Length: 151
Picture 1 (spheres, one colour):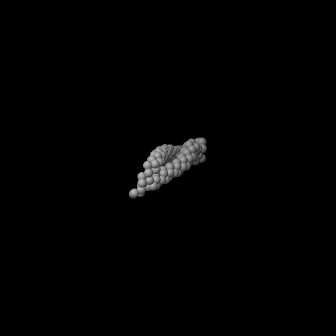
Picture 2 (cartoon, one colour; picture 1 turned 180 degrees about the vertical axis):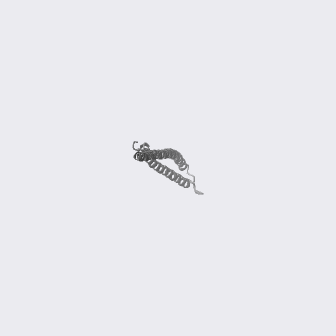
Picture 3 (cartoon, helix red, strand yellow; picture 1 turned 90 degrees about the horizontal axis):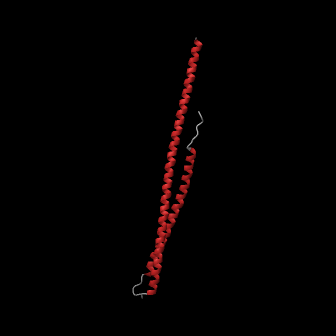
């Protein structure tokens, strides 16, 4: 019988490496999502502060030019907020895709590990059968050899 070699070891090692790479990508992407969320939160804070600053004080004169400039500024802030929200959602979508790929890779690795264990168990059973055959043959030879001496 030829020596036992794990035929699944190389693909299993590949899956483990892929899993490690995907875990690294997942961490980087999670950090990117956190960064985008922090940027968006900071922008929303600055928008709230700007809104507080533009509110007129009771009895203060209303300045039309100032109000028009603020409206332009506010529109720009809203566009920026919408763009950052889209970027954040894109990063979250990428995160979900990486997470899904990682789960699939982990599932594949577990299947390969089970196949490897099954293959090893089959090999051990085959080895035990051959060993038992050899022992049976040795016992028969010994028994047959004793009969020859008796004659």
